[in-house]
Length: 208
Image 1: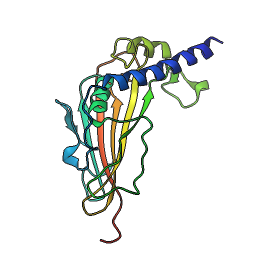
Image 2: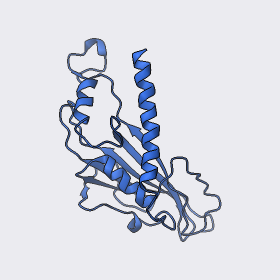
Image 3: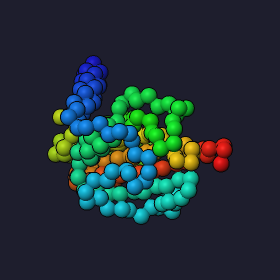
Image 4: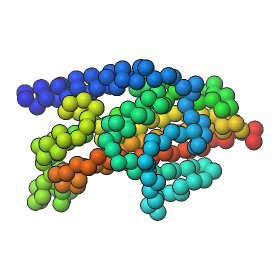
């Protein structure tokens, strides 16, 4: 019964946090549309470009471009910064059929919050586990961090939208923020976030 009550309370916190985030940006002017070029993607001050791992893919290209950055600050603050500049909507309608060249759809965002369950750190089978990461330690550590709401911390935030290039090609855009501040043993927290900017060419205009 106690776990069910805790679950309901956390769901209410999530709903309230989303409403609070939307209210926090209400005074910011709405841009004409979402970015349609790499150069137009907003980047916060003091981000540092990170090298890509070989298995991730290319940093640039005609069909896919991927850029990764590190930002030394709370992911919740970075999320609000992007929410204000991209004006993402939780339930944005994404219809690409009527996009004209150099136009974009509304920006949709999704949030994933830190969960609190014990995890085995040295084995995939709990029965043979000898080193545990405890949920109570994770919560205690995150209590020292900035959260979207008290008791609610963002683990990942993703903004997605589509645009039609000047030549008529359909492009998907993604800006993803991942919390990078929690240590592997859940004992320490240093405010940091990984920022990924991705552009993917979905299909070319058949007239080309």
